[in-house]
Amino acid sequence: MSDFKGRPLGGVEKLYLALNEIFVKTFAIVAELGSKIPENSIRPALNELSKRHPQLKYRIAEDDQFQFWFISDADSVIPFRIIQIEDKADWPETVAAELTNSFDLSRAPLFRVVVLQKQSNSVLIMLSNHSIGDGMSVSFALRDFLKILSGMKSGTLPVPLSMDESLNEISFPVPDFSPVGLGSLGRRDKNTGASIYINKLQFSEAFTNALADRSRNESTTVNGALNAAVAIAMSKIDGRFSGRPLVTRSPVSARKALNIDDDYALNVITKNLDVNPADHQDFWEFARIITSELNGAPSIEQVRGYVKYFRSRILQPVPFAQIVKGIEATIGTDFMVSNLGRIEEESFGEYRIESLWGPIVISGTGAEQTVGAVTISGKLSLTNISLSEMPALLTETAGVLSAAVR
Image (cartoon, rainbow, N blue to C red; front, top):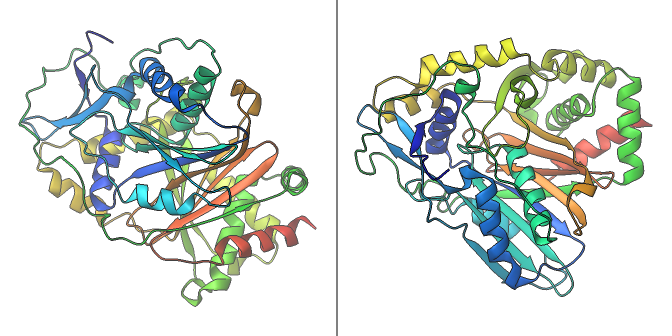
Protein backbone atom coordinates (compact mmCIF):
# COMPACT_ATOMS: atom_id res chain seq x y z
CA MET A 1 0.00 0.00 0.00
CA SER A 2 2.78 2.46 0.91
CA ASP A 3 4.31 2.33 -2.59
CA PHE A 4 0.97 2.48 -4.42
CA LYS A 5 0.83 5.71 -6.43
CA GLY A 6 -2.28 5.10 -8.45
CA ARG A 7 -3.92 3.25 -11.28
CA PRO A 8 -6.14 4.28 -14.17
CA LEU A 9 -9.88 3.73 -13.88
CA GLY A 10 -11.13 0.77 -15.86
CA GLY A 11 -13.88 1.08 -18.43
CA VAL A 12 -16.75 0.27 -16.04
CA GLU A 13 -15.31 2.47 -13.29
CA LYS A 14 -15.16 5.37 -15.74
CA LEU A 15 -18.72 4.56 -16.83
CA TYR A 16 -19.88 5.14 -13.24
CA LEU A 17 -17.82 8.32 -13.11
CA ALA A 18 -19.72 9.50 -16.20
CA LEU A 19 -23.04 8.47 -14.63
CA ASN A 20 -22.01 10.57 -11.62
CA GLU A 21 -22.06 13.60 -13.93
CA ILE A 22 -25.64 12.88 -14.98
CA PHE A 23 -26.93 12.43 -11.45
CA VAL A 24 -24.62 11.96 -8.50
CA LYS A 25 -23.94 8.29 -7.80
CA THR A 26 -23.54 8.38 -4.05
CA PHE A 27 -25.16 5.25 -2.62
CA ALA A 28 -25.92 4.02 0.87
CA ILE A 29 -26.57 1.00 3.05
CA VAL A 30 -28.40 1.41 6.36
CA ALA A 31 -28.05 -0.99 9.30
CA GLU A 32 -30.38 -0.73 12.28
CA LEU A 33 -28.44 -2.30 15.13
CA GLY A 34 -29.80 -3.98 18.21
CA SER A 35 -27.40 -2.10 20.49
CA LYS A 36 -25.54 1.19 20.72
CA ILE A 37 -22.08 1.86 19.26
CA PRO A 38 -19.72 3.50 21.79
CA GLU A 39 -18.95 6.88 20.28
CA ASN A 40 -15.28 6.86 21.30
CA SER A 41 -14.81 3.59 19.37
CA ILE A 42 -15.88 4.93 15.98
CA ARG A 43 -12.72 6.80 14.94
CA PRO A 44 -10.22 4.01 15.75
CA ALA A 45 -12.50 1.42 14.10
CA LEU A 46 -12.79 3.50 10.91
CA ASN A 47 -9.01 3.91 10.86
CA GLU A 48 -8.64 0.14 10.98
CA LEU A 49 -11.29 -0.24 8.27
CA SER A 50 -9.37 2.02 5.88
CA LYS A 51 -6.22 0.00 6.52
CA ARG A 52 -8.06 -3.18 5.52
CA HIS A 53 -9.60 -1.72 2.35
CA PRO A 54 -7.09 0.36 0.32
CA GLN A 55 -9.83 1.78 -1.90
CA LEU A 56 -11.12 3.73 1.11
CA LYS A 57 -8.14 6.09 0.75
CA TYR A 58 -8.73 6.92 -2.92
CA ARG A 59 -9.44 10.16 -4.71
CA ILE A 60 -9.81 10.62 -8.47
CA ALA A 61 -7.68 12.82 -10.71
CA GLU A 62 -7.52 13.49 -14.45
CA ASP A 63 -4.39 13.20 -16.58
CA ASP A 64 -3.35 15.09 -19.69
CA GLN A 65 -4.87 12.41 -21.96
CA PHE A 66 -8.46 12.86 -20.67
CA GLN A 67 -8.18 9.71 -18.56
CA PHE A 68 -8.91 9.36 -14.86
CA TRP A 69 -6.88 7.76 -12.11
CA PHE A 70 -7.40 6.51 -8.60
CA ILE A 71 -4.76 8.16 -6.41
CA SER A 72 -4.12 6.94 -2.88
CA ASP A 73 -3.93 9.53 -0.11
CA ALA A 74 -2.22 7.79 2.80
CA ASP A 75 -3.07 10.60 5.22
CA SER A 76 -6.82 10.61 4.54
CA VAL A 77 -9.28 9.49 7.21
CA ILE A 78 -12.87 8.35 6.82
CA PRO A 79 -15.16 11.20 7.91
CA PHE A 80 -18.09 10.48 10.17
CA ARG A 81 -20.90 12.33 11.89
CA ILE A 82 -22.90 11.42 14.97
CA ILE A 83 -26.49 12.65 15.15
CA GLN A 84 -28.53 12.26 18.31
CA ILE A 85 -32.16 11.37 17.47
CA GLU A 86 -35.32 10.34 19.27
CA ASP A 87 -36.17 6.65 19.48
CA LYS A 88 -39.21 7.12 17.24
CA ALA A 89 -37.21 8.99 14.57
CA ASP A 90 -36.45 7.19 11.31
CA TRP A 91 -33.53 7.39 8.85
CA PRO A 92 -34.93 8.05 5.30
CA GLU A 93 -34.85 11.85 5.66
CA THR A 94 -31.20 11.74 6.77
CA VAL A 95 -30.21 9.45 3.90
CA ALA A 96 -32.06 11.60 1.34
CA ALA A 97 -30.11 14.64 2.61
CA GLU A 98 -26.82 12.71 2.44
CA LEU A 99 -27.46 11.73 -1.18
CA THR A 100 -27.70 15.41 -2.10
CA ASN A 101 -24.33 16.00 -0.44
CA SER A 102 -22.00 14.78 -3.16
CA PHE A 103 -18.39 13.74 -2.67
CA ASP A 104 -15.60 16.02 -3.82
CA LEU A 105 -13.96 13.43 -6.07
CA SER A 106 -10.64 15.29 -5.99
CA ARG A 107 -10.32 14.65 -2.24
CA ALA A 108 -9.95 11.32 -0.46
CA PRO A 109 -11.77 9.35 0.73
CA LEU A 110 -14.89 8.79 -1.35
CA PHE A 111 -16.60 7.08 1.58
CA ARG A 112 -18.20 8.40 4.77
CA VAL A 113 -20.29 7.27 7.72
CA VAL A 114 -23.23 8.70 9.65
CA VAL A 115 -24.27 7.24 13.00
CA LEU A 116 -27.76 7.99 14.28
CA GLN A 117 -27.69 7.51 18.04
CA LYS A 118 -30.93 6.62 19.78
CA GLN A 119 -31.36 6.01 23.50
CA SER A 120 -30.52 2.31 23.34
CA ASN A 121 -29.37 1.52 19.81
CA SER A 122 -27.59 2.95 16.77
CA VAL A 123 -28.47 3.26 13.10
CA LEU A 124 -25.37 3.01 10.95
CA ILE A 125 -25.35 4.66 7.51
CA MET A 126 -22.44 3.99 5.14
CA LEU A 127 -22.14 6.06 1.97
CA SER A 128 -19.81 5.66 -1.00
CA ASN A 129 -19.26 7.03 -4.46
CA HIS A 130 -20.14 4.30 -6.96
CA SER A 131 -16.89 4.55 -8.94
CA ILE A 132 -14.90 2.95 -6.12
CA GLY A 133 -17.29 0.18 -5.13
CA ASP A 134 -20.61 -1.63 -5.43
CA GLY A 135 -23.32 -2.76 -3.03
CA MET A 136 -21.40 -5.88 -2.02
CA SER A 137 -18.37 -3.68 -1.24
CA VAL A 138 -20.32 -1.67 1.31
CA SER A 139 -21.79 -4.83 2.85
CA PHE A 140 -18.20 -6.06 3.35
CA ALA A 141 -17.20 -2.70 4.85
CA LEU A 142 -20.19 -2.88 7.20
CA ARG A 143 -19.29 -6.40 8.28
CA ASP A 144 -15.63 -5.52 8.83
CA PHE A 145 -16.44 -2.32 10.74
CA LEU A 146 -18.73 -4.16 13.16
CA LYS A 147 -16.17 -6.95 13.61
CA ILE A 148 -13.48 -4.36 14.39
CA LEU A 149 -15.81 -2.72 16.92
CA SER A 150 -16.24 -6.17 18.46
CA GLY A 151 -12.48 -6.43 19.00
CA MET A 152 -11.86 -8.88 16.19
CA LYS A 153 -8.72 -8.64 14.07
CA SER A 154 -8.90 -7.60 10.43
CA GLY A 155 -6.11 -8.21 7.96
CA THR A 156 -5.11 -5.86 5.16
CA LEU A 157 -6.38 -6.72 1.70
CA PRO A 158 -4.26 -6.15 -1.41
CA VAL A 159 -4.87 -3.17 -3.65
CA PRO A 160 -7.94 -4.17 -5.70
CA LEU A 161 -7.71 -4.52 -9.46
CA SER A 162 -10.16 -3.12 -11.94
CA MET A 163 -12.22 -5.67 -13.84
CA ASP A 164 -10.07 -4.79 -16.86
CA GLU A 165 -6.91 -5.86 -15.04
CA SER A 166 -8.55 -9.00 -13.63
CA LEU A 167 -9.37 -9.99 -17.21
CA ASN A 168 -5.88 -9.08 -18.47
CA GLU A 169 -7.34 -6.45 -20.76
CA ILE A 170 -4.63 -4.11 -19.47
CA SER A 171 -1.57 -4.80 -17.39
CA PHE A 172 1.04 -2.96 -15.40
CA PRO A 173 3.32 -1.12 -15.90
CA VAL A 174 1.16 1.75 -17.07
CA PRO A 175 2.42 5.22 -18.01
CA ASP A 176 3.16 7.53 -15.09
CA PHE A 177 0.32 9.75 -13.99
CA SER A 178 0.60 13.31 -15.37
CA PRO A 179 -1.91 15.47 -13.49
CA VAL A 180 -3.71 18.45 -14.96
CA GLY A 181 -4.91 19.95 -11.68
CA LEU A 182 -8.53 19.21 -10.91
CA GLY A 183 -9.40 18.94 -14.59
CA SER A 184 -13.15 18.42 -14.83
CA LEU A 185 -13.46 16.96 -11.32
CA GLY A 186 -14.41 18.39 -7.98
CA ARG A 187 -17.70 18.45 -6.13
CA ARG A 188 -20.75 17.70 -8.22
CA ASP A 189 -23.63 19.98 -7.30
CA LYS A 190 -26.34 18.55 -9.54
CA ASN A 191 -28.18 16.98 -6.62
CA THR A 192 -28.53 20.30 -4.81
CA GLY A 193 -32.18 21.17 -4.40
CA ALA A 194 -33.38 17.81 -5.73
CA SER A 195 -36.26 16.17 -3.89
CA ILE A 196 -35.29 12.56 -3.27
CA TYR A 197 -38.07 10.22 -2.18
CA ILE A 198 -37.28 7.15 -0.10
CA ASN A 199 -39.85 4.58 1.01
CA LYS A 200 -39.25 1.26 2.74
CA LEU A 201 -41.04 -1.97 3.55
CA GLN A 202 -40.00 -5.10 5.40
CA PHE A 203 -41.54 -8.57 5.07
CA SER A 204 -41.91 -10.93 8.00
CA GLU A 205 -39.59 -13.90 8.34
CA ALA A 206 -42.51 -16.24 7.64
CA PHE A 207 -43.41 -14.49 4.39
CA THR A 208 -39.77 -14.20 3.32
CA ASN A 209 -39.37 -17.97 3.73
CA ALA A 210 -42.66 -18.63 1.93
CA LEU A 211 -41.57 -16.43 -1.00
CA ALA A 212 -38.20 -18.18 -1.24
CA ASP A 213 -39.81 -21.65 -1.08
CA ARG A 214 -42.47 -20.82 -3.67
CA SER A 215 -39.90 -19.25 -6.01
CA ARG A 216 -37.78 -22.39 -5.77
CA ASN A 217 -40.76 -24.64 -6.38
CA GLU A 218 -41.70 -22.56 -9.43
CA SER A 219 -38.19 -22.96 -10.88
CA THR A 220 -37.38 -19.29 -10.51
CA THR A 221 -35.72 -17.00 -7.95
CA VAL A 222 -36.73 -14.35 -5.44
CA ASN A 223 -34.95 -11.81 -7.66
CA GLY A 224 -37.04 -12.87 -10.66
CA ALA A 225 -40.20 -12.63 -8.55
CA LEU A 226 -39.24 -9.16 -7.31
CA ASN A 227 -38.66 -7.87 -10.85
CA ALA A 228 -41.98 -9.32 -12.01
CA ALA A 229 -43.86 -7.86 -9.04
CA VAL A 230 -42.37 -4.38 -9.46
CA ALA A 231 -43.24 -4.37 -13.17
CA ILE A 232 -46.83 -5.41 -12.46
CA ALA A 233 -47.15 -2.88 -9.63
CA MET A 234 -45.90 0.00 -11.81
CA SER A 235 -48.30 -0.91 -14.61
CA LYS A 236 -51.18 -0.87 -12.10
CA ILE A 237 -50.24 2.39 -10.42
CA ASP A 238 -49.35 4.58 -13.39
CA GLY A 239 -51.18 4.53 -16.71
CA ARG A 240 -47.98 5.50 -18.54
CA PHE A 241 -46.69 1.96 -17.93
CA SER A 242 -49.90 0.07 -18.63
CA GLY A 243 -50.02 -2.19 -21.68
CA ARG A 244 -46.46 -1.51 -22.81
CA PRO A 245 -43.09 -3.11 -22.11
CA LEU A 246 -41.12 -1.68 -19.23
CA VAL A 247 -37.35 -1.50 -19.37
CA THR A 248 -35.63 -2.81 -16.27
CA ARG A 249 -31.94 -2.60 -15.43
CA SER A 250 -30.56 -5.45 -13.35
CA PRO A 251 -27.11 -5.19 -11.74
CA VAL A 252 -25.35 -8.54 -11.44
CA SER A 253 -22.20 -9.23 -9.44
CA ALA A 254 -19.16 -10.31 -11.45
CA ARG A 255 -17.23 -11.41 -8.36
CA LYS A 256 -17.80 -15.14 -8.83
CA ALA A 257 -16.70 -15.07 -12.46
CA LEU A 258 -13.60 -13.05 -11.56
CA ASN A 259 -12.87 -15.14 -8.45
CA ILE A 260 -12.98 -12.05 -6.25
CA ASP A 261 -14.14 -12.19 -2.64
CA ASP A 262 -14.07 -9.28 -0.19
CA ASP A 263 -12.41 -6.47 -2.16
CA TYR A 264 -13.91 -3.00 -1.88
CA ALA A 265 -14.11 -2.44 -5.63
CA LEU A 266 -16.60 -2.10 -8.47
CA ASN A 267 -17.23 -5.61 -9.78
CA VAL A 268 -20.69 -5.46 -11.32
CA ILE A 269 -22.24 -5.62 -14.76
CA THR A 270 -25.79 -4.67 -15.69
CA LYS A 271 -28.38 -6.21 -17.97
CA ASN A 272 -31.34 -4.35 -19.48
CA LEU A 273 -34.55 -6.26 -20.18
CA ASP A 274 -37.89 -5.40 -21.79
CA VAL A 275 -40.63 -6.85 -19.60
CA ASN A 276 -44.35 -6.59 -20.33
CA PRO A 277 -46.79 -7.79 -17.66
CA ALA A 278 -49.64 -7.63 -20.20
CA ASP A 279 -48.07 -10.54 -22.09
CA HIS A 280 -48.24 -12.90 -19.10
CA GLN A 281 -51.40 -13.83 -17.24
CA ASP A 282 -49.53 -16.17 -14.90
CA PHE A 283 -47.23 -14.43 -12.40
CA TRP A 284 -44.80 -17.32 -12.04
CA GLU A 285 -44.44 -17.74 -15.78
CA PHE A 286 -43.54 -14.04 -15.93
CA ALA A 287 -40.98 -14.48 -13.12
CA ARG A 288 -39.45 -17.54 -14.82
CA ILE A 289 -38.99 -15.66 -18.09
CA ILE A 290 -37.26 -12.77 -16.30
CA THR A 291 -35.03 -15.19 -14.40
CA SER A 292 -34.15 -16.98 -17.63
CA GLU A 293 -33.26 -13.68 -19.33
CA LEU A 294 -31.09 -12.59 -16.40
CA ASN A 295 -29.44 -16.02 -16.50
CA GLY A 296 -28.02 -15.89 -12.96
CA ALA A 297 -24.38 -15.09 -12.27
CA PRO A 298 -22.53 -14.01 -15.42
CA SER A 299 -19.91 -16.18 -17.07
CA ILE A 300 -16.36 -14.97 -17.52
CA GLU A 301 -17.11 -14.54 -21.24
CA GLN A 302 -20.10 -12.29 -20.47
CA VAL A 303 -18.04 -10.17 -18.07
CA ARG A 304 -15.24 -9.88 -20.63
CA GLY A 305 -17.68 -8.80 -23.33
CA TYR A 306 -19.21 -6.17 -21.05
CA VAL A 307 -15.80 -4.79 -20.05
CA LYS A 308 -14.53 -4.74 -23.62
CA TYR A 309 -17.64 -2.87 -24.77
CA PHE A 310 -17.19 -0.08 -22.25
CA ARG A 311 -13.42 0.06 -22.72
CA SER A 312 -13.97 0.77 -26.41
CA ARG A 313 -16.70 3.29 -25.68
CA ILE A 314 -15.47 5.04 -22.54
CA LEU A 315 -11.67 4.99 -22.58
CA GLN A 316 -11.26 7.31 -25.55
CA PRO A 317 -8.84 10.28 -25.47
CA VAL A 318 -11.64 12.83 -25.85
CA PRO A 319 -13.03 15.44 -23.44
CA PHE A 320 -15.00 13.88 -20.60
CA ALA A 321 -18.08 15.98 -21.34
CA GLN A 322 -18.32 14.27 -24.73
CA ILE A 323 -18.27 10.84 -23.07
CA VAL A 324 -20.94 11.91 -20.60
CA LYS A 325 -23.21 13.23 -23.34
CA GLY A 326 -23.02 9.93 -25.22
CA ILE A 327 -23.84 7.90 -22.09
CA GLU A 328 -26.73 10.14 -21.08
CA ALA A 329 -28.46 9.53 -24.40
CA THR A 330 -28.62 5.76 -23.83
CA ILE A 331 -29.38 5.09 -20.16
CA GLY A 332 -33.14 5.51 -19.94
CA THR A 333 -34.95 2.71 -18.10
CA ASP A 334 -38.18 2.49 -16.10
CA PHE A 335 -36.95 0.69 -13.00
CA MET A 336 -34.06 -1.18 -11.43
CA VAL A 337 -34.08 -3.92 -8.80
CA SER A 338 -30.72 -4.18 -7.01
CA ASN A 339 -30.75 -7.28 -4.82
CA LEU A 340 -27.88 -8.00 -2.42
CA GLY A 341 -29.39 -11.38 -1.59
CA ARG A 342 -29.13 -13.02 1.83
CA ILE A 343 -26.51 -11.67 4.26
CA GLU A 344 -25.27 -14.03 6.96
CA GLU A 345 -25.97 -12.34 10.28
CA GLU A 346 -23.44 -14.32 12.30
CA SER A 347 -20.55 -12.54 10.53
CA PHE A 348 -20.95 -9.23 12.37
CA GLY A 349 -19.17 -9.98 15.64
CA GLU A 350 -21.06 -9.08 18.81
CA TYR A 351 -23.38 -6.66 17.02
CA ARG A 352 -26.77 -7.82 15.78
CA ILE A 353 -28.33 -6.14 12.78
CA GLU A 354 -32.06 -5.91 13.38
CA SER A 355 -32.82 -4.54 9.91
CA LEU A 356 -30.65 -3.90 6.85
CA TRP A 357 -31.67 -1.62 3.97
CA GLY A 358 -30.19 -0.99 0.55
CA PRO A 359 -28.55 -0.50 -1.76
CA ILE A 360 -30.04 3.01 -1.82
CA VAL A 361 -29.03 4.92 -4.95
CA ILE A 362 -30.48 7.18 -7.62
CA SER A 363 -30.28 5.12 -10.80
CA GLY A 364 -29.65 6.58 -14.25
CA THR A 365 -31.09 10.05 -14.63
CA GLY A 366 -33.18 9.77 -11.48
CA ALA A 367 -36.52 9.49 -13.27
CA GLU A 368 -36.67 5.70 -12.91
CA GLN A 369 -37.76 3.81 -9.80
CA THR A 370 -34.95 2.03 -7.95
CA VAL A 371 -35.78 -0.83 -5.59
CA GLY A 372 -33.07 -2.09 -3.25
CA ALA A 373 -33.49 -5.54 -1.72
CA VAL A 374 -31.58 -7.40 0.97
CA THR A 375 -32.38 -10.22 3.39
CA ILE A 376 -30.96 -10.51 6.89
CA SER A 377 -32.23 -12.27 10.03
CA GLY A 378 -34.66 -14.06 7.73
CA LYS A 379 -36.48 -10.84 6.72
CA LEU A 380 -36.54 -9.33 3.23
CA SER A 381 -36.30 -5.53 3.23
CA LEU A 382 -37.16 -3.31 0.26
CA THR A 383 -36.36 0.34 -0.34
CA ASN A 384 -37.68 2.51 -3.16
CA ILE A 385 -35.81 5.66 -4.15
CA SER A 386 -36.46 8.06 -7.00
CA LEU A 387 -36.85 11.70 -7.99
CA SER A 388 -40.35 10.76 -9.18
CA GLU A 389 -42.29 9.72 -6.11
CA MET A 390 -44.44 6.62 -6.43
CA PRO A 391 -45.53 6.19 -2.79
CA ALA A 392 -47.65 3.09 -3.42
CA LEU A 393 -44.98 1.13 -5.30
CA LEU A 394 -43.72 -1.02 -2.43
CA THR A 395 -47.15 -1.72 -0.95
CA GLU A 396 -48.49 -2.65 -4.38
CA THR A 397 -45.42 -4.82 -5.01
CA ALA A 398 -46.02 -6.55 -1.66
CA GLY A 399 -49.65 -7.14 -2.63
CA VAL A 400 -48.64 -8.74 -5.93
CA LEU A 401 -46.17 -11.03 -4.16
CA SER A 402 -48.66 -11.95 -1.43
CA ALA A 403 -51.26 -12.94 -4.02
CA ALA A 404 -48.68 -15.00 -5.90
CA VAL A 405 -47.44 -16.85 -2.82
CA ARG A 406 -50.92 -17.77 -1.54
